[in-house]
Image (cartoon, rainbow, N blue to C red):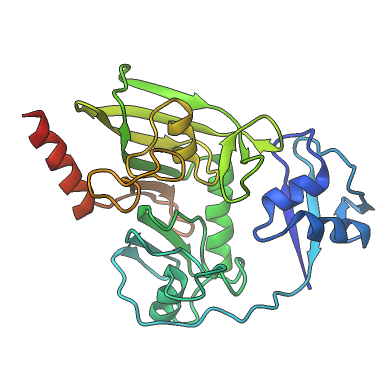
Length: 305
C-alpha cells in the first residue's frame, strides 16, 4: 500500500466525490470503500464520506498497490525537444496516448520513455505513469515534460500547483471570435450524464481559467493561442465550446462530423515555460506547428484568397 496527499484548492465538496474526481482511476464506489475502512485522514483524524472539503485541507489517502502490471519499454521514436539528467521534454504526436489506460495498454508515450530513459524516470506516478508530470489528450499534439527523478517531479508539480509552469496551445476554432483576446473563467467537472466527457458546471467541479488571443481570422474559423492558468481535463476544448467556439475537428465537444478532412481536433501544445528543478534556470521551450495544423491553415488562407 502507499499513501498519497492531496491539497484541496476549493471547499464545499463531498469528500467521496472529491476523491473520485482527483485520484486517477478511482471510482465513487472505491472512494466509499476507502472512507468506510478508515483509510482517508485529515491530519490524524479519520473522516467519513459526508465530510465537506475546506480550502487548503491536506487529505491523506492510503491506496492499495496497483494490480496492473508495470508499463513495458517499447522502441518507439521520440521527438525530443530537450533532455538532461533530470528532465525530458518531448513533442508528442497526435494520436499517441500519454500513458497506459483501459483500451490503450501499450504504444504510449510512457512506453517510449521507458525504452529511451531506462530506469531513469520518477516513480511518483506509479507503474503506469512513471515520470509523467502532466499529460495532454491522445488527439492533441505537442509538448509534454517528464521527470527523471522524484525530486524533479515534486518540484515541477509544485510549479504546476503554483501556476508558474505555464503552457500555451495553438488552436483553430469554429466561428469568428470578434474580440482580440479574452478569458474564460468557468468551473469544469464531469458531465452529469456522460462520464467520458467534461462540462462547465457548478456541481462537483474545479476552478478553471483559460486565456485566449486571436492570431488570425478566416471566413468561418479563428486561429487562436490559448494559455492555461489551470490544468483541468479537456480544459481548452470544454472552455472554447462553452463560449460557442469549439475546437475544429473536436467531435466530442464540437461538430459531430469530421471537417476539412480532419480526424482529430486542431489543437497543439506549442510552448512550455518553467523553472528547471535543479539549475533554477528559466526554461522556455517551443514545438513548431505539426504538418496537419499547417495544412489546415494553408487551406483556410487559400479559401480566403
